[in-house]
Image 1 (cartoon, rainbow, N blue to C red):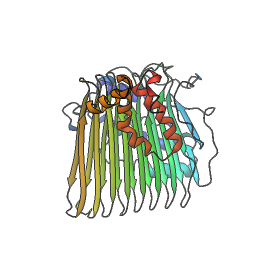
Image 2: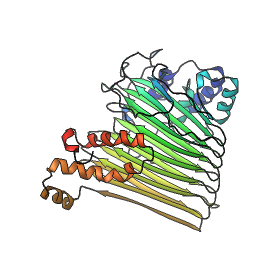
Image 3: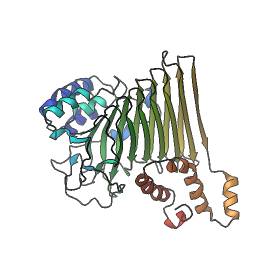
Image 4: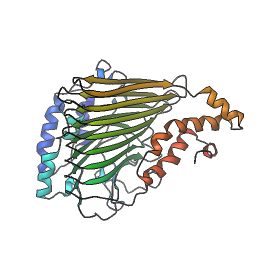
Length: 434
């Protein structure tokens, strides 16, 4: 193993419950046989792992009780769990669990809960699909299990916040979330990843698994708000049974490196998946989204829309793949990726893919790369709008369709001013869009 691979095991290793030890053992064995991807690896062709070539240490035994007021988070009414530097913060967590919802940490699981977690953990992960999954297993000491009972409908959103305080330099954090929705249940889940303004360097290895039984419905928001030198290599892996519905919204503000893999596996007829995503790197930041929707059975549908605005000398990567298996007749799938470059030095590498082995399907995919429309810019300037303000308006307008489509009002209200400020460091330039 490379130096990073060896020290990564030690950096994030923590004492785990006895029932997790077999998971750790399998992870260590698989990680020892894993080769880190290089630029010659097709899925990592445009993304360098150079930000990982430093020494990451284990987080302190207990997270420093530093104030976290400067970390932007959505204000939600439902139950909230907060983790800081990999440790659960009970004093920041709040909310009562409604009937039908079970929300438990791996470390607190009783024997019955532990058995259910162990049986489901990793079942949405396809072998070899996520390079860093073995490391996640090998260092897994705690996580969150979210379970919704059959026919239960959870009206208030569940919020899980994974925070980095910047109190410990160059730490390695393992994040794991397992979500199981039973038949005909529904829920809304918001995941937030953020750090303090002072930043600090942290490597987050995060995996979320979504298991939707027949007729289940999940609205999932995953907000990557980390900034500065943060490195996040994560994935969301979903398995959908018949007639289930998954609505996903993904946001990535830039940092040193963010690589997110999204994999949705349709295993039951009538399943539908809708994925919307925004990525907004600037400076010298890098954001990489790799998505794959596996249509393995007939009569399933999917719609995917990702938009990126790349500024300064930043780099973005989008690789979206739709895989339609031979038996997946009557499939309907759409994939769209649109990108806006606001600098001559900004870079986007986009690759939409359709891999179709069935003959009775309706599919479409496409990608665009453009700069700000000079005619639209000229129009606004002739109406008395200063150039800088006009550029902010046009940039925000490019993503506004996806922002307005967010069904959770609190998330939308949180994101609108956050994104407006992203384009205009001078708040006065946002007066026409807020």
